[in-house]
Length: 248
Length: 248
DNA sequence: GCAAAAGTGTTTCATATACACCCATGA
DNA sequence: TCATGGGTGTATATGAAACACTTTTGC
Image 1 (tube, helix red, strand yellow):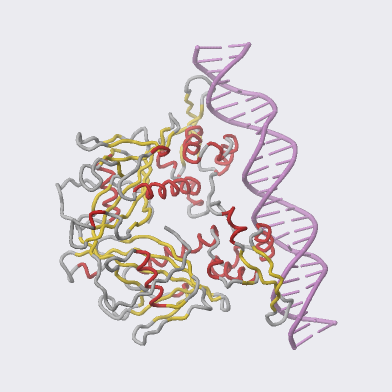
Image 2: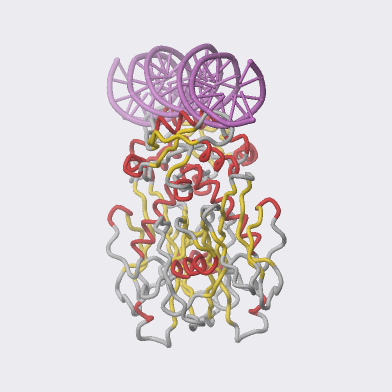
């Protein structure tokens, strides 16, 4: 992780032997349960050593001919069925001794983890329970102790999620095609915390930007005035691409 | 690199064989030549196949027992002597076929590159010319075609540099202990482009933040009124840590 | 005195923040 | 008709952008 220390290790062993690696991909998969206002992360129960019977991030080892991104998508498709998702690379963790398999298992093979970060829509995500593996959404607030350095990876992913939400339109990858401004607001509040902005200001700021189009369709959810359904207009958003847009 | 496509490749070969990796670290090392207002990147001439006699980012393969960060620091210390630097992980490039060695050289060994991004002070950086290897600072504006996918890595690093400068105090890792506000301004201008801000506004914004302390010492550089030397006060900066600070 | 570089101040305009208030619906 | 959630508007403060102006030096 980023650091500002400036140790420059002195080492002049001439031609030391190279490490052999297996490369794993681990996904931090988030979703937002807007009904209960909870941010969730997907965990699986490990079925083998090491860390058998510990919760962990869903992961896999990279196969021959498979790119890192392919492996990340493969994890997704093995664990959940979704139509829309956002996925991007997070960070690569690769210190020696991060995986206990390095000690015994093999002839000095190192395990390196490239982590990816994903956001999916909770309501449409269907978990694939294969009967053997435990798999579950956990509120980020109270995840247990995880296998390997997965708690660290999760923390890092959570930070990234918050930034992404503030600076880019990921939310719309994960909302249904049509949504109310309150849906959007709920999503932001559960991820960023209660006091990130007043609803009415959030509202006017977003509408002024001009890439949310009112469909005219109204929905009524219980009591109260019916809300308009809006749609994200990708074309109208185009000029904002790569600009330091702030939704806060 | 981050993407928003949602292809979920279908693949259900049961237990395909895993890829074996060698892991390389490549550094995008920037410095700013404030005298000539140029942003520079450090390149080395490759001495072996593949891409012999092509310029490339300085890199190395990770050794046994060595962490990724260690390897990144080792590259630094092998190429330049500096007292201060900023270093952080950039991105991991790992598609198959990105390294031509994968084709012939070996039994299906893949090469993966974890890139790091560094910023050093140009004036104090002393390049280590070992007589054999070509090594040089290149203006980012006109780097040639590089080996592997290094142009892509460089582009990515450049983007990260600009963000870092806007949102965090990296500049002070790379400026001398005492500096004039103009030194700081020059640094920002060469990296972010001429029209990122008016000098006087830049000035008042930064001073108001309160983590630059005037040492009272004056320096005269040619004609004109002598400038005050300022110092970065890390303690006074502490409250801003992790806040979305903007220097723009 | 004049040019050059450093540093200060002012005016204008846009936006964030904190509200108060009106509107449409179900019970 | 009242509670509930949706939606609009306004007053104030804060900050960005542009630019005019003063100060201190070398020549």
